[in-house]
Image (cartoon, rainbow, N blue to C red; front, side, top):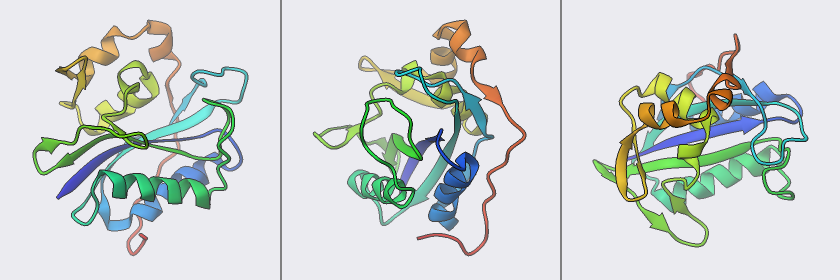
Length: 177
């Protein structure tokens, strides 16, 4: 069974509907959904705030490249335009980690880098992730580190900028692609 941790975000259009489209697209593969957080943009900061969440899903039919193709399909359906790096977007679906059974998938292919190379620096990934997987671990510089410790090491201003909202992503019966 292939298990994936996904970070999803949107700062253009109907942000919550864009995030919900990912949950709906996963359907019965969804195992956990974090709360929705409003966050400052990362990288290019002259843009609107994001809504972000983390999902855990599993699907025995998908491997790392299969999850990446699926993520791109979701972004394409949301009319994502790939322009400015870290710029505004209708939908961003990032693979944070992928496991094949108990083994973490490591990939350094041109199109797929797993685990996500910047996840350990992003409060908008780590904080929601901890709410659905408190004992999560992530390899950083060749060694497995608790996500809780990685989050604690971030600049306090980055952690505070990840604000919980009252918005909820619903897992709906019968959804999925």
